[in-house]
Length: 297
Image 1 (tube, rainbow, N blue to C red):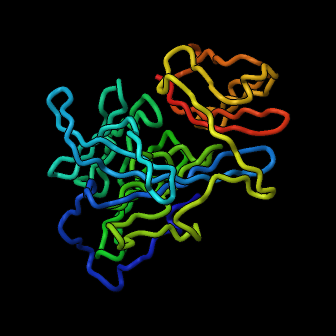
Image 2: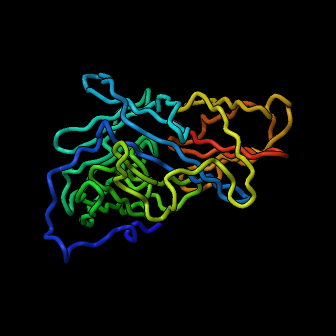
């Protein structure tokens, strides 16, 4: 996806200046994401909400906010996301998964030409050297927002940050677009403050997608995968495993490369030989398909 087509150019309407820096971790803000699950019979789309929890958590002397998520459109059920996030007064945002070190995922103090060293362990265990190659502005419901386009010469894609909103891939998916197109994608659908809609992704007609297969309407069942993040052995739980039937398992890395593709009846998957990063797991039985994502460290 070329994110430049998402931008509305306002240089002829407004001098190149921005309002005061906008806080990203607004406690009233709600982010809605859509995940694309690649399947042989057609892509599957599912949504979840993400919000900043109210209580503070101190880790190694730094004060973080917890993140909560909900896969319930009515938002009646919320769960801990397993991530912690903090924002500094100068506009730097740090994120850490449970059990991992923190990494810088945004720096809204960066200027045109600056290099931002991003470490987002939601995606990859190594740093990216993201250079700010373009600055612009976008008028949203709550005012003007600064836009930053960044790239790392070692990766094929461009990343877009919107101040006060985050990445166009979602709050904690910063720099996902640097990797270019891949199987298993995330996009930010909408952000809102209470009943006020702030941002709507123009590439999607809805702010919510029920988990479904595009084309034939077959429901995709969820998996329980643990521990996640995983270091060595991943345990898989699903109703089909109780029958002992064989199933096809595919493990796809973040670049879209299939690293495991075989038939098995086991409920465990050895991840010890895989490099650190995000993976997408697809399981296929004679009657259903299952999908999930894994963070390997």
